[in-house]
Image (cartoon, rainbow, N blue to C red; front, side, top):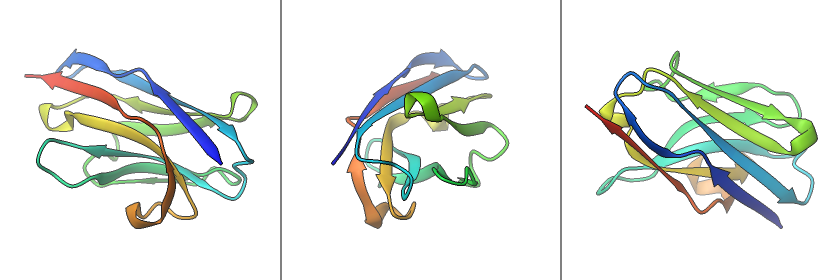
Length: 120
């Protein structure tokens, strides 16, 4: 079992920045992708960013590439999502996730979600 606890959401103006954190506990993460997904009201949950825990290779959705950065801190078993140049369309509940791939259908573990609201 893996437990994921997110923090760092909030309200920010367009153009601003936020950093989300996801602290993981439980089994080893070496065989997992760790990532972030988001879900806006009335929309499906969508992929945002992911990294392969062992190798650190990163992946991004086209809508956030160049603005968001995913990283990890091994000693703290924590994954971060640095979000810059935020837009109102980034408003959503952001979920930390762990799975054997970063396809939403294959995620094994989800965090509880943290709200990000970007005002125009």
